[in-house]
Length: 478
Image 1: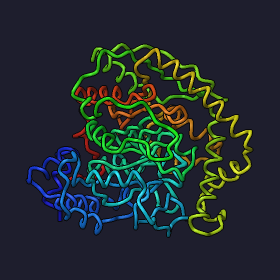
Image 2: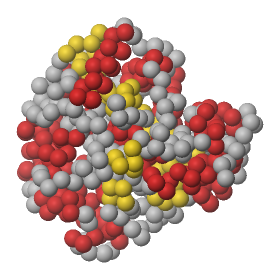
Image 3: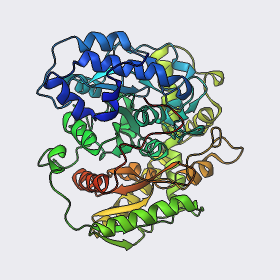
């Protein structure tokens, strides 16, 4: 039986839902019940939510609401990777952690709770977030609500599928190579990666992960994403990276339209691979829309050294994955064995454990040189526009082909990872659906610390070509 308040999940974003609570038109408990009902009715075919937390959520919703927060009392989901929720399991998509229960909240979760957001469950992810799809052996594949035979993207695929079907208005994710933006593109929602260090990440994950991974949310509305960043940004003790301070709230910046922007557009990836015609068409339509809105769009390319850059990045990434496997031994007290990990993860482990300190530092020098070159490029422009992906959402299992792991990854996602290795903010905006009804995102990047310009143009694009009311035909929403 459909919950009577489920229609509120479709009609209102998180800010709208919080206002209903503040005005006394609905209680937080009623919204949590509606969210639970929606998850229970839709999650079966999607496999977006892998750990329900209904009892904890209902208990939290019955407590007094801090109405000074613009998001108080609103339901949300948390990705089952890195973010620790006290008393809940944290599998990170791996059989090696299938029974691990977190003893305490991570800093970001503490900030969500302080803001009055209520966690109703945890979402699907790939093992350690290592792939651009969400198809782990432990948790099973998350399925794209626009086509159940296709990927949600990854590794925040469960969160993106949940947002596309309005299970909640916002869902946490993390992004070490596009893992917020890739699934946002595949599922037709808004994915935003903030600057390096803008949001806290617990320091026990080490410099590599705090340097390349950004945690934030996937949403339908731009203003929800901005509001969440207002409530969570700021370094935690021990953080090595602190981006420039924002002079006003991100939400308030949306009150102003962006000035005329100078936007560089690049279709060709830094690696020599073909771009699907649908992704090319999506980019061209976005270019036309930006010009119609009064912005200057110029074809330009930062000229990054492709082969050297890709080799350095995957060398660093393999070392990081090897370290994560060693870390599971510390958490569980169980020796890491091949049988407890997926083949790709174990290959990264085998490659990464043999990376020498000298090679590791040499790889970072290559990445730092690319960071400097891209910064010089962005000094000439306000934004950099590319496709989000080189292909539409892949068929389920399509990523796992018997060829080179690196080539497989870059053929699907050659654009997003640049923002992680350089630390700049970036976003995928859902402006185009192809003839098969599949969403295709457009990817914008800005200079380090300039989230405000991204939010402003995202809001302008959202108003010019609204996407909020587009719902997947594969799943009956209401």
